[in-house]
Amino acid sequence: MKIGILSAGGDCPGINAAIRGVGKTAIVKYGMEVIGISNGFSGLIDMNYEVLTEKKLSGILTVGGTILGTSRIKPFKPQEGDTVEDKPQVIKENYHNMGLDALVCIGGNGTQRTANLLSKEGLNIIGLPKTIDNDVWGTDVTFGFDSAVNIATDAIDRLHTTANSHKRVMVIEVMGHNAGWIALYSGVAGGGDIILLPEVEYDMDVVANTLLNRSEKGKPYSIVVVGEGIKVPKKKSAARFIGKQIQERTGLETRETILGYTQRGGTPSPADRILATRYGAYAAELIHTKNFGSMVCIKNNQITSIPLEEVGGKTKLIDLNNRLVTKARNMGVCFGDKF
Image (tube, rainbow, N blue to C red; front, side, top):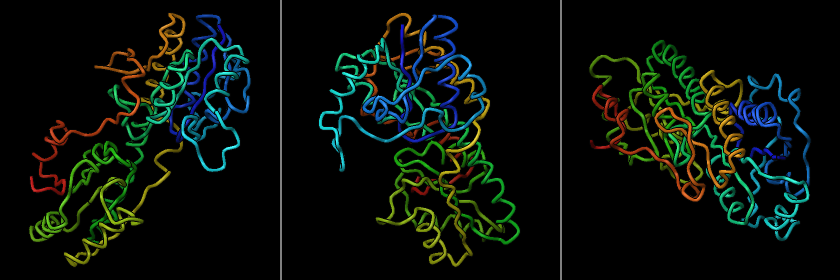
């Protein structure tokens, strides 16, 4: 068999480990030929690809980013500046011109949605879920998430010392447009006093009163962890808006830190290397058994798969009854709501 691999959407730690997991398993165990497609779905449109040998896959396990490159092109959604009219049709033709028997699509929600649409067009597709946001529906965890949480937690740990030294409120903004998984996990792991999530409607009076109560009790500093996707006025940074509100409402000296893209870069954590490798190896197995139209997932630490049509268009958000949220509340963590 001849298979293609592409990575699409935002980069994240662990993509290369996944490419290696797919490729080495396909080559060594199943004797397949592996093609690496450059720059996401645009590589299929432009016929930009290379053969991935076992040698080319060596040494990439610990490397961040993606050796294949990536892009956010959406084949089924017309975009300004498009020079190709019917991108899905071109992709189908090039898939067959390249002699592919299957295509592995590594990416987050948008990529899995596209993967499902290509599957419905008759192509043999396997999805591999990656995103630091951990918001792909149908899997317990995506690779990239653990690395991002480690980076965010390390940053929060460092802010504790500065906050304590200067007796300040420190507001730290982490990634997560719609889902607050990074904010929740890094906030709890880093000892955040207030954690604001996109899924939870916050009240600035609750936030301000919580900080004033802490100050009155002799607690000289506070850590506020903010998911970037919380509701703030348009074109406003979440951290800067919250920081300004805190300063105005409490008079407490407040500083903001925005982690930004540092959360997506660098070497993947050991946990992400292992998860991405497991995902990749299982993707090769699904191709071998011709179980197409599926996305690799993990349920209760068991690698399995679910139909792509169940994934597309859905987002895994934090439920307010999430056990970690409940345990954090029980320890006095404020989520900004009138709980």
